[in-house]
Image (cartoon, rainbow, N blue to C red; front, side, top):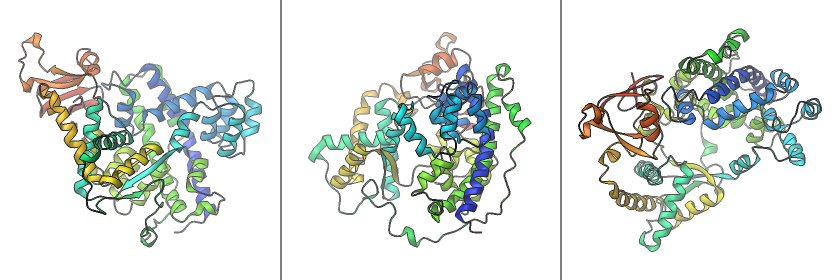
Amino acid sequence: MFLHGRDADGRLRELSAQRARLRPVLGTLAAAVLDRRAFEPLGFRCLGDWSRERLGVGARTLREWARVERALAGLPLLRAAVRAGEVSWTVARKIVGVVSPESEAACLASVRGRTVRAVEVMLRAVAEPATGASEAAEENRVLVRVACPRRVAMKWAAALELARRMAGESLPTWACAEAIAAECAAAGAAVSPPPPDRCSPLHSARAPQRNAESGLRAQVWPHLAWTPPAVPGGDRLERLSHGLDRCAPRALDRRFREAIAFLQQIDIEIGRVLRQVVERKLYRELGFETFERYATERLDGSARRLVRLARAEHRAPEVATAFRAGRITLFQAEVLLRGGRVDRAERVTLRRLEDEVPEAEVAFRAPRDVAILFEAMVARVGLEAMLDHAIVTWVEAGRAFEDYADFGRDGFRCTVPACTARRNLQSHHIVFRSAGGPDRPWNRTTLCAFHDHRGVHAGRVRIRGRAPDRLVYTLGVGRFRSGDVKL
Protein backbone atom coordinates (compact mmCIF):
# COMPACT_ATOMS: atom_id res chain seq x y z
CA MET A 1 0.00 0.00 0.00
CA PHE A 2 1.46 3.33 -1.07
CA LEU A 3 1.35 6.23 1.32
CA HIS A 4 0.97 9.90 0.49
CA GLY A 5 3.27 12.34 2.20
CA ARG A 6 0.67 13.51 4.72
CA ASP A 7 -0.35 9.94 5.56
CA ALA A 8 3.26 8.90 6.21
CA ASP A 9 3.91 12.03 8.24
CA GLY A 10 0.79 11.45 10.33
CA ARG A 11 1.79 7.88 11.10
CA LEU A 12 5.30 8.97 11.96
CA ARG A 13 3.95 11.63 14.32
CA GLU A 14 1.81 9.00 16.07
CA LEU A 15 4.78 6.68 16.45
CA SER A 16 6.95 9.56 17.69
CA ALA A 17 4.31 10.33 20.32
CA GLN A 18 4.50 6.73 21.53
CA ARG A 19 8.29 7.04 21.57
CA ALA A 20 7.95 10.18 23.70
CA ARG A 21 6.15 8.14 26.37
CA LEU A 22 9.31 6.07 26.74
CA ARG A 23 11.66 9.06 27.00
CA PRO A 24 11.27 9.72 30.75
CA VAL A 25 11.76 6.02 31.52
CA LEU A 26 14.88 5.73 29.35
CA GLY A 27 16.33 8.95 30.78
CA THR A 28 15.67 7.91 34.38
CA LEU A 29 17.20 4.47 33.82
CA ALA A 30 20.24 5.99 32.08
CA ALA A 31 20.77 8.44 34.95
CA ALA A 32 20.58 5.60 37.48
CA VAL A 33 23.16 3.56 35.57
CA LEU A 34 25.53 6.53 35.31
CA ASP A 35 25.13 7.68 38.92
CA ARG A 36 25.77 4.21 40.33
CA ARG A 37 28.16 3.02 37.60
CA ALA A 38 25.99 -0.08 37.59
CA PHE A 39 27.90 -1.59 34.67
CA GLU A 40 30.99 -2.23 36.81
CA PRO A 41 29.39 -4.74 39.25
CA LEU A 42 28.08 -6.55 36.15
CA GLY A 43 31.66 -7.08 34.97
CA PHE A 44 31.95 -4.41 32.25
CA ARG A 45 34.93 -2.08 32.05
CA CYS A 46 33.11 0.98 30.74
CA LEU A 47 29.64 2.28 29.95
CA GLY A 48 30.10 1.81 26.19
CA ASP A 49 30.94 -1.90 26.49
CA TRP A 50 27.81 -2.53 28.54
CA SER A 51 25.44 -0.37 26.49
CA ARG A 52 26.56 -1.74 23.11
CA GLU A 53 26.37 -5.35 24.26
CA ARG A 54 23.20 -5.26 26.36
CA LEU A 55 21.15 -2.46 24.77
CA GLY A 56 22.48 -1.87 21.26
CA VAL A 57 22.97 1.81 22.14
CA GLY A 58 26.16 3.88 22.24
CA ALA A 59 27.48 5.43 25.44
CA ARG A 60 27.08 8.93 23.99
CA THR A 61 23.37 8.35 23.38
CA LEU A 62 22.91 7.00 26.89
CA ARG A 63 24.59 10.04 28.44
CA GLU A 64 22.40 12.33 26.34
CA TRP A 65 19.23 10.60 27.55
CA ALA A 66 20.35 11.08 31.14
CA ARG A 67 21.42 14.72 30.62
CA VAL A 68 18.10 15.76 29.09
CA GLU A 69 15.97 13.94 31.67
CA ARG A 70 17.94 15.47 34.55
CA ALA A 71 17.50 18.95 33.08
CA LEU A 72 13.78 18.44 32.42
CA ALA A 73 13.26 17.42 36.04
CA GLY A 74 13.79 21.07 37.01
CA LEU A 75 11.73 22.44 34.09
CA PRO A 76 8.15 21.22 34.64
CA LEU A 77 6.55 23.31 31.89
CA LEU A 78 8.99 22.15 29.23
CA ARG A 79 8.77 18.56 30.45
CA ALA A 80 4.97 18.62 30.18
CA ALA A 81 5.20 20.09 26.66
CA VAL A 82 7.60 17.34 25.57
CA ARG A 83 5.35 14.59 26.97
CA ALA A 84 2.32 16.12 25.28
CA GLY A 85 4.11 16.25 21.93
CA GLU A 86 3.97 20.07 21.72
CA VAL A 87 7.79 20.28 21.70
CA SER A 88 9.94 17.56 20.14
CA TRP A 89 12.59 15.78 22.16
CA THR A 90 15.21 17.04 19.71
CA VAL A 91 14.25 20.66 20.42
CA ALA A 92 14.23 19.97 24.16
CA ARG A 93 17.71 18.43 23.91
CA LYS A 94 19.03 21.58 22.29
CA ILE A 95 17.50 24.13 24.65
CA VAL A 96 17.73 22.52 28.11
CA GLY A 97 21.28 23.79 28.49
CA VAL A 98 20.26 27.46 28.17
CA VAL A 99 16.83 27.45 29.87
CA SER A 100 16.38 28.29 33.55
CA PRO A 101 13.23 27.91 35.69
CA GLU A 102 12.77 31.70 35.53
CA SER A 103 12.98 31.88 31.72
CA GLU A 104 11.22 28.60 31.05
CA ALA A 105 7.78 30.01 30.19
CA ALA A 106 9.16 32.65 27.80
CA CYS A 107 11.49 30.15 26.12
CA LEU A 108 8.68 27.64 25.72
CA ALA A 109 6.50 30.26 24.03
CA SER A 110 9.37 31.06 21.65
CA VAL A 111 10.10 27.47 20.53
CA ARG A 112 6.58 26.00 20.49
CA GLY A 113 5.59 25.32 16.89
CA ARG A 114 9.05 26.11 15.46
CA THR A 115 11.24 23.75 13.49
CA VAL A 116 14.52 22.36 14.77
CA ARG A 117 16.47 24.51 12.31
CA ALA A 118 14.67 27.64 13.48
CA VAL A 119 15.48 26.79 17.10
CA GLU A 120 19.14 26.27 16.17
CA VAL A 121 19.24 29.75 14.60
CA MET A 122 17.72 31.24 17.76
CA LEU A 123 20.25 29.45 19.95
CA ARG A 124 23.18 30.69 17.89
CA ALA A 125 21.91 34.21 18.37
CA VAL A 126 21.90 34.00 22.18
CA ALA A 127 24.47 31.34 23.14
CA GLU A 128 26.56 28.55 21.75
CA PRO A 129 24.77 25.24 22.41
CA ALA A 130 26.65 22.76 24.59
CA THR A 131 26.77 20.17 21.84
CA GLY A 132 27.51 22.61 19.03
CA ALA A 133 31.14 21.60 18.48
CA SER A 134 30.44 17.86 18.31
CA GLU A 135 27.40 18.33 16.05
CA ALA A 136 29.39 20.59 13.70
CA ALA A 137 32.14 17.98 13.50
CA GLU A 138 29.57 15.28 12.72
CA GLU A 139 28.00 17.38 9.96
CA ASN A 140 31.47 17.98 8.44
CA ARG A 141 31.98 14.24 7.91
CA VAL A 142 31.56 12.74 4.46
CA LEU A 143 30.89 9.22 3.29
CA VAL A 144 33.74 7.30 1.65
CA ARG A 145 32.85 4.09 -0.16
CA VAL A 146 35.24 1.95 -2.20
CA ALA A 147 34.10 -0.97 -4.34
CA CYS A 148 36.29 -4.04 -3.92
CA PRO A 149 36.15 -7.85 -4.16
CA ARG A 150 35.60 -10.00 -1.08
CA ARG A 151 39.32 -10.77 -0.91
CA VAL A 152 40.19 -7.09 -0.46
CA ALA A 153 37.34 -6.60 2.03
CA MET A 154 38.95 -9.29 4.20
CA LYS A 155 42.30 -7.46 3.97
CA TRP A 156 40.51 -4.27 5.00
CA ALA A 157 39.20 -6.02 8.14
CA ALA A 158 42.72 -7.29 8.92
CA ALA A 159 44.23 -3.81 8.45
CA LEU A 160 41.62 -2.28 10.79
CA GLU A 161 42.48 -4.86 13.45
CA LEU A 162 46.22 -4.19 13.13
CA ALA A 163 45.70 -0.41 13.26
CA ARG A 164 43.84 -0.81 16.55
CA ARG A 165 46.53 -3.10 17.93
CA MET A 166 49.24 -0.60 17.06
CA ALA A 167 47.27 2.22 18.67
CA GLY A 168 46.43 0.17 21.75
CA GLU A 169 42.77 1.19 21.63
CA SER A 170 39.57 0.62 19.65
CA LEU A 171 39.96 3.43 17.14
CA PRO A 172 36.92 4.41 15.04
CA THR A 173 37.02 3.20 11.44
CA TRP A 174 37.90 6.61 10.03
CA ALA A 175 40.91 6.92 12.36
CA CYS A 176 42.13 3.49 11.24
CA ALA A 177 41.70 4.57 7.61
CA GLU A 178 43.78 7.68 8.32
CA ALA A 179 46.55 5.55 9.87
CA ILE A 180 46.52 3.15 6.88
CA ALA A 181 46.70 5.99 4.35
CA ALA A 182 49.37 7.84 6.33
CA GLU A 183 51.50 4.68 6.58
CA CYS A 184 51.30 4.29 2.82
CA ALA A 185 52.02 7.97 2.17
CA ALA A 186 55.10 7.80 4.42
CA ALA A 187 56.46 4.92 2.32
CA GLY A 188 56.35 7.06 -0.83
CA ALA A 189 57.52 5.25 -3.96
CA ALA A 190 58.00 1.97 -2.07
CA VAL A 191 54.34 1.09 -2.76
CA SER A 192 53.63 0.11 -6.37
CA PRO A 193 50.38 1.25 -7.99
CA PRO A 194 47.95 -1.51 -9.10
CA PRO A 195 46.44 -2.07 -12.54
CA PRO A 196 43.79 0.54 -13.41
CA ASP A 197 40.22 0.17 -12.15
CA ARG A 198 41.22 -2.38 -9.51
CA CYS A 199 39.45 -0.64 -6.62
CA SER A 200 38.00 2.81 -6.99
CA PRO A 201 35.99 5.21 -4.85
CA LEU A 202 32.25 4.79 -5.26
CA HIS A 203 30.85 7.39 -2.92
CA SER A 204 32.50 10.34 -1.23
CA ALA A 205 32.34 14.12 -0.94
CA ARG A 206 33.09 14.45 -4.67
CA ALA A 207 31.45 11.27 -5.93
CA PRO A 208 27.75 11.15 -6.95
CA GLN A 209 25.34 10.28 -4.17
CA ARG A 210 24.03 7.23 -6.02
CA ASN A 211 25.56 5.05 -8.71
CA ALA A 212 23.98 4.90 -12.13
CA GLU A 213 22.24 1.60 -11.50
CA SER A 214 20.42 2.69 -8.35
CA GLY A 215 17.54 4.21 -10.31
CA LEU A 216 17.01 0.94 -12.19
CA ARG A 217 16.77 -1.16 -9.05
CA ALA A 218 13.45 -2.90 -8.54
CA GLN A 219 11.45 -1.40 -5.68
CA VAL A 220 9.84 -3.75 -3.19
CA TRP A 221 7.29 -1.97 -1.02
CA PRO A 222 5.98 -3.47 2.21
CA HIS A 223 2.25 -3.65 2.80
CA LEU A 224 1.66 -1.10 5.53
CA ALA A 225 -1.61 -2.17 7.10
CA TRP A 226 -1.65 0.21 10.04
CA THR A 227 -1.58 -1.66 13.32
CA PRO A 228 0.00 0.45 16.09
CA PRO A 229 2.68 -1.42 18.08
CA ALA A 230 1.55 -3.02 21.31
CA VAL A 231 3.38 -0.61 23.60
CA PRO A 232 2.51 -1.19 27.26
CA GLY A 233 0.33 1.16 29.25
CA GLY A 234 1.57 4.00 31.41
CA ASP A 235 1.47 2.01 34.63
CA ARG A 236 3.75 -0.68 33.27
CA LEU A 237 6.18 1.87 31.85
CA GLU A 238 6.26 3.86 35.07
CA ARG A 239 6.99 0.69 37.01
CA LEU A 240 10.29 0.36 35.17
CA SER A 241 11.52 3.67 36.62
CA HIS A 242 10.23 3.25 40.19
CA GLY A 243 12.39 2.19 43.11
CA LEU A 244 15.65 2.37 41.18
CA ASP A 245 17.57 3.27 44.35
CA ARG A 246 16.71 -0.20 45.69
CA CYS A 247 17.48 -2.04 42.43
CA ALA A 248 20.48 -4.33 42.27
CA PRO A 249 22.65 -3.77 39.15
CA ARG A 250 21.32 -6.94 37.54
CA ALA A 251 17.70 -5.86 38.09
CA LEU A 252 18.55 -2.42 36.65
CA ASP A 253 20.05 -4.11 33.60
CA ARG A 254 16.89 -6.21 33.20
CA ARG A 255 14.59 -3.18 33.41
CA PHE A 256 16.65 -1.25 30.86
CA ARG A 257 16.56 -4.17 28.42
CA GLU A 258 12.78 -4.35 28.82
CA ALA A 259 12.43 -0.64 28.05
CA ILE A 260 14.66 -0.99 24.97
CA ALA A 261 12.49 -3.92 23.80
CA PHE A 262 9.44 -1.62 23.94
CA LEU A 263 11.38 1.01 21.97
CA GLN A 264 12.31 -1.50 19.26
CA GLN A 265 8.65 -2.40 18.71
CA ILE A 266 8.07 1.22 17.75
CA ASP A 267 11.32 1.64 15.81
CA ILE A 268 10.63 -1.19 13.37
CA GLU A 269 7.34 0.50 12.41
CA ILE A 270 9.12 3.86 12.12
CA GLY A 271 11.64 2.26 9.77
CA ARG A 272 8.90 0.94 7.49
CA VAL A 273 7.31 4.37 7.19
CA LEU A 274 10.67 6.11 6.70
CA ARG A 275 11.54 3.70 3.92
CA GLN A 276 8.70 5.00 1.79
CA VAL A 277 9.50 8.58 2.79
CA VAL A 278 13.13 8.33 1.62
CA GLU A 279 12.74 6.08 -1.45
CA ARG A 280 9.67 7.84 -2.86
CA LYS A 281 10.94 11.26 -1.75
CA LEU A 282 7.75 12.00 0.16
CA TYR A 283 9.64 14.57 2.22
CA ARG A 284 9.41 16.91 -0.75
CA GLU A 285 5.60 16.82 -0.54
CA LEU A 286 5.99 17.99 3.05
CA GLY A 287 8.23 20.94 2.16
CA PHE A 288 11.66 19.52 3.10
CA GLU A 289 14.63 19.71 0.73
CA THR A 290 16.35 16.56 1.99
CA PHE A 291 15.46 13.45 3.95
CA GLU A 292 18.01 14.42 6.61
CA ARG A 293 16.14 17.65 7.36
CA TYR A 294 12.84 15.80 7.57
CA ALA A 295 14.30 13.13 9.87
CA THR A 296 15.82 15.84 12.09
CA GLU A 297 12.37 17.37 12.61
CA ARG A 298 10.57 14.09 13.31
CA LEU A 299 13.19 11.90 14.99
CA ASP A 300 16.26 12.21 17.21
CA GLY A 301 18.63 9.74 15.55
CA SER A 302 19.14 6.30 13.96
CA ALA A 303 16.87 7.21 11.03
CA ARG A 304 19.19 5.79 8.37
CA ARG A 305 19.70 2.61 10.39
CA LEU A 306 15.97 2.05 10.69
CA VAL A 307 15.53 2.60 6.93
CA ARG A 308 18.22 -0.01 6.20
CA LEU A 309 16.48 -2.49 8.46
CA ALA A 310 13.13 -1.84 6.76
CA ARG A 311 14.67 -2.21 3.30
CA ALA A 312 16.06 -5.61 4.24
CA GLU A 313 12.82 -6.83 5.81
CA HIS A 314 11.69 -8.69 2.67
CA ARG A 315 15.01 -10.55 2.26
CA ALA A 316 15.78 -11.07 5.96
CA PRO A 317 12.37 -11.23 7.69
CA GLU A 318 13.80 -13.25 10.58
CA VAL A 319 16.09 -10.33 11.49
CA ALA A 320 13.20 -7.83 11.56
CA THR A 321 11.06 -10.26 13.56
CA ALA A 322 13.80 -10.85 16.13
CA PHE A 323 14.42 -7.09 16.41
CA ARG A 324 10.72 -6.35 16.90
CA ALA A 325 10.53 -9.04 19.60
CA GLY A 326 13.53 -7.58 21.43
CA ARG A 327 15.63 -10.74 20.96
CA ILE A 328 18.41 -8.79 19.22
CA THR A 329 19.51 -5.15 19.41
CA LEU A 330 19.86 -2.63 16.60
CA PHE A 331 23.65 -3.14 16.48
CA GLN A 332 23.19 -6.91 16.17
CA ALA A 333 20.56 -6.43 13.46
CA GLU A 334 22.95 -4.27 11.43
CA VAL A 335 25.61 -6.99 11.55
CA LEU A 336 23.12 -9.73 10.64
CA LEU A 337 22.02 -7.82 7.54
CA ARG A 338 25.54 -8.40 6.21
CA GLY A 339 25.22 -12.14 6.87
CA GLY A 340 24.94 -14.55 9.74
CA ARG A 341 22.09 -16.20 11.63
CA VAL A 342 19.79 -14.84 14.32
CA ASP A 343 20.31 -17.88 16.53
CA ARG A 344 24.07 -17.25 16.42
CA ALA A 345 23.54 -13.60 17.42
CA GLU A 346 21.54 -14.76 20.44
CA ARG A 347 24.33 -17.09 21.53
CA VAL A 348 27.43 -14.91 21.16
CA THR A 349 28.42 -11.38 22.16
CA LEU A 350 28.25 -8.47 19.75
CA ARG A 351 32.06 -8.36 19.72
CA ARG A 352 32.27 -11.96 18.47
CA LEU A 353 29.46 -11.43 15.95
CA GLU A 354 31.25 -8.45 14.41
CA ASP A 355 34.45 -10.52 14.13
CA GLU A 356 32.60 -13.36 12.38
CA VAL A 357 30.67 -11.18 9.89
CA PRO A 358 33.07 -8.59 8.40
CA GLU A 359 31.97 -5.71 6.21
CA ALA A 360 31.32 -6.64 2.57
CA GLU A 361 32.77 -3.34 1.33
CA VAL A 362 34.96 -0.48 2.48
CA ALA A 363 32.61 2.25 3.69
CA PHE A 364 32.93 4.78 6.49
CA ARG A 365 32.23 8.40 7.40
CA ALA A 366 35.28 10.55 8.05
CA PRO A 367 36.32 14.19 8.49
CA ARG A 368 36.77 15.83 5.13
CA ASP A 369 40.59 16.02 5.34
CA VAL A 370 40.83 12.31 6.20
CA ALA A 371 38.53 11.42 3.29
CA ILE A 372 40.70 13.47 0.90
CA LEU A 373 43.90 11.75 2.11
CA PHE A 374 42.38 8.26 1.90
CA GLU A 375 40.95 8.74 -1.59
CA ALA A 376 44.19 10.31 -2.81
CA MET A 377 46.15 7.23 -1.73
CA VAL A 378 43.55 4.89 -3.26
CA ALA A 379 43.82 6.79 -6.55
CA ARG A 380 47.63 6.76 -6.37
CA VAL A 381 48.44 3.16 -5.43
CA GLY A 382 45.09 1.38 -5.15
CA LEU A 383 43.25 0.07 -2.13
CA GLU A 384 44.72 -3.44 -2.11
CA ALA A 385 48.32 -2.26 -2.44
CA MET A 386 47.77 0.25 0.36
CA LEU A 387 46.30 -2.43 2.63
CA ASP A 388 49.08 -4.91 1.81
CA HIS A 389 51.73 -2.34 2.74
CA ALA A 390 50.06 -1.46 6.05
CA ILE A 391 49.56 -5.12 6.99
CA VAL A 392 53.16 -6.12 6.23
CA THR A 393 54.59 -3.05 8.01
CA TRP A 394 52.53 -3.51 11.17
CA VAL A 395 53.05 -7.28 11.34
CA GLU A 396 56.81 -6.71 11.24
CA ALA A 397 56.52 -4.03 13.93
CA GLY A 398 54.46 -6.42 16.02
CA ARG A 399 57.29 -8.94 16.14
CA ALA A 400 58.69 -6.85 18.97
CA PHE A 401 55.91 -8.39 21.06
CA GLU A 402 56.97 -12.01 20.47
CA ASP A 403 57.79 -12.35 24.19
CA TYR A 404 54.11 -11.79 24.87
CA ALA A 405 52.79 -14.88 23.14
CA ASP A 406 49.55 -14.71 25.12
CA PHE A 407 48.71 -11.30 23.62
CA GLY A 408 49.14 -12.54 20.06
CA ARG A 409 47.11 -15.68 20.74
CA ASP A 410 44.30 -13.63 22.27
CA GLY A 411 44.22 -10.97 19.55
CA PHE A 412 45.91 -8.21 21.57
CA ARG A 413 42.77 -7.43 23.53
CA CYS A 414 41.11 -8.36 26.81
CA THR A 415 39.45 -11.79 26.60
CA VAL A 416 36.60 -10.97 29.01
CA PRO A 417 33.40 -11.15 26.91
CA ALA A 418 32.30 -7.86 25.30
CA CYS A 419 35.37 -5.96 26.58
CA THR A 420 36.90 -3.70 23.91
CA ALA A 421 40.05 -2.74 25.85
CA ARG A 422 43.40 -2.97 24.07
CA ARG A 423 45.41 -0.77 26.41
CA ASN A 424 47.21 -1.78 29.64
CA LEU A 425 47.01 -5.49 28.82
CA GLN A 426 48.32 -8.03 31.31
CA SER A 427 48.94 -11.77 31.22
CA HIS A 428 46.69 -13.11 33.98
CA HIS A 429 47.16 -16.49 35.68
CA ILE A 430 43.83 -18.32 35.81
CA VAL A 431 44.92 -20.37 38.80
CA PHE A 432 46.80 -17.76 40.82
CA ARG A 433 50.53 -18.26 41.26
CA SER A 434 49.93 -17.89 45.00
CA ALA A 435 47.62 -20.93 44.79
CA GLY A 436 50.22 -23.03 42.97
CA GLY A 437 49.15 -22.21 39.41
CA PRO A 438 51.82 -23.03 36.82
CA ASP A 439 53.33 -20.49 34.44
CA ARG A 440 52.09 -22.37 31.38
CA PRO A 441 50.16 -21.03 28.33
CA TRP A 442 46.98 -22.93 29.29
CA ASN A 443 46.97 -21.13 32.68
CA ARG A 444 47.37 -17.62 31.23
CA THR A 445 44.91 -15.33 29.48
CA THR A 446 45.03 -11.67 28.47
CA LEU A 447 43.12 -9.19 30.64
CA CYS A 448 42.99 -5.41 30.73
CA ALA A 449 44.02 -3.68 33.96
CA PHE A 450 40.38 -3.07 34.95
CA HIS A 451 39.28 -6.68 34.61
CA ASP A 452 42.46 -7.96 36.26
CA HIS A 453 42.44 -5.72 39.35
CA ARG A 454 38.81 -4.58 39.68
CA GLY A 455 37.20 -7.58 38.02
CA VAL A 456 38.86 -10.88 38.91
CA HIS A 457 40.69 -9.79 42.08
CA ALA A 458 37.62 -7.83 43.27
CA GLY A 459 35.35 -10.84 42.81
CA ARG A 460 33.19 -9.28 40.07
CA VAL A 461 34.48 -11.65 37.38
CA ARG A 462 35.42 -15.31 37.74
CA ILE A 463 37.47 -17.29 35.22
CA ARG A 464 37.76 -21.09 35.25
CA GLY A 465 39.16 -23.68 32.80
CA ARG A 466 42.07 -23.87 30.37
CA ALA A 467 43.17 -21.21 27.89
CA PRO A 468 42.48 -20.41 25.18
CA ASP A 469 39.44 -22.48 24.16
CA ARG A 470 38.09 -23.99 27.38
CA LEU A 471 37.61 -20.99 29.63
CA VAL A 472 34.33 -20.08 31.36
CA TYR A 473 33.75 -16.46 32.45
CA THR A 474 31.15 -15.56 35.08
CA LEU A 475 29.94 -11.95 34.98
CA GLY A 476 27.06 -10.19 36.68
CA VAL A 477 24.84 -10.71 33.61
CA GLY A 478 25.56 -14.42 33.12
CA ARG A 479 28.15 -17.00 32.13
CA PHE A 480 30.18 -17.17 28.92
CA ARG A 481 32.77 -19.53 27.51
CA SER A 482 35.74 -18.86 25.26
CA GLY A 483 34.62 -17.36 21.98
CA ASP A 484 32.13 -15.03 23.68
CA VAL A 485 29.46 -17.74 23.63
CA LYS A 486 26.59 -17.21 26.05
CA LEU A 487 25.78 -20.11 28.37
